[in-house]
Image (cartoon, rainbow, N blue to C red; front, side):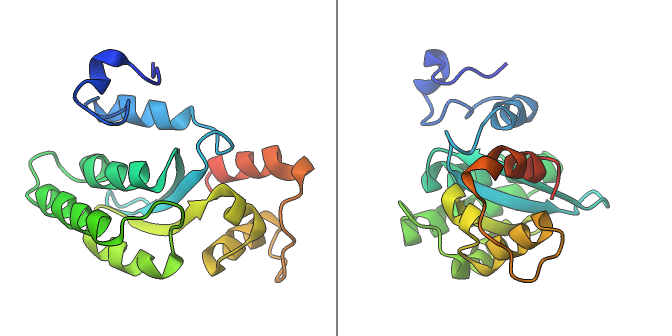
Length: 172
């Protein structure tokens, strides 16, 4: 069970999920709603020979980048894999180089994917509002899938938000 703000963990970590087992981290993230945690990432993983796309939601771009550095490599690579330390270092360097606070530019995705490889790759990242509006090519692609292939998909209307969130969580 994930409890935001668990004081025993926050003493040593910035985010409540840090320092937990990977299964607990995933449980914490699965409980998040993008209207409460508006910064998201769609990750694609084929490291285990099976392709999978998942969305996770965070309170800030910084929390998202900390997750990518600390949890994503451990999720997708063997625990003793030497690449985990390299991935963490590369993502931390990216984090300090760009200091993302209120925007996550899509043109930076190839750079972060290079740092994240081979633990997975980012398909989309950004703010939930931008995803709903199709504000980037990747967001438009997700809207296109939601709109059953419509080449010019309309933004998500307020009465469609919950349906769209379900679509995203069900493995777009």
